[in-house]
Image (cartoon, rainbow, N blue to C red; front, top):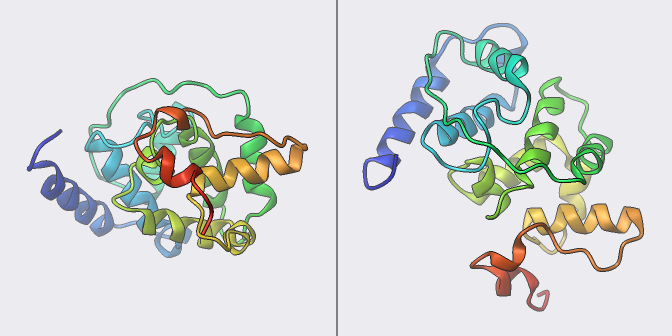
Length: 190
């Protein structure tokens, strides 16, 4: 779905998802609005995530059934390139998780999968804007969010943390060289 109808359709789907009657812990989960936004984005064709959000078919269906029961959503089926550092990125995220919600495990897998995309991380996840990704980081991985004192782009920051942890000193994020904002991310820090 491209063109001028994409944004209103995305907003309508987001409203439908948030109006669905989740119950139990899912209804109170601080990630529910964020998950709704990424599901709406994925359904609108935004981002790089596959139809199962990088969770596997069963876990992807479980996410939808748990957080948005009754919603019949046509998700975009696509392949995402596997990255060799996926488990390391997932571990980095999980090592900094808030330990407030079981959905943090899902979020870590989704973020690690989206790191394979070719755009900014918020775009690869399918969010509407970078603020949603910043909120996701604060809710799920507050230690990492606090460490991003220079407001570095999130994918670059995650990779910098991963590389620092591994003792790698030259560490570009995947596919940054082809990004239209390369000069903004890899220019001088301010």
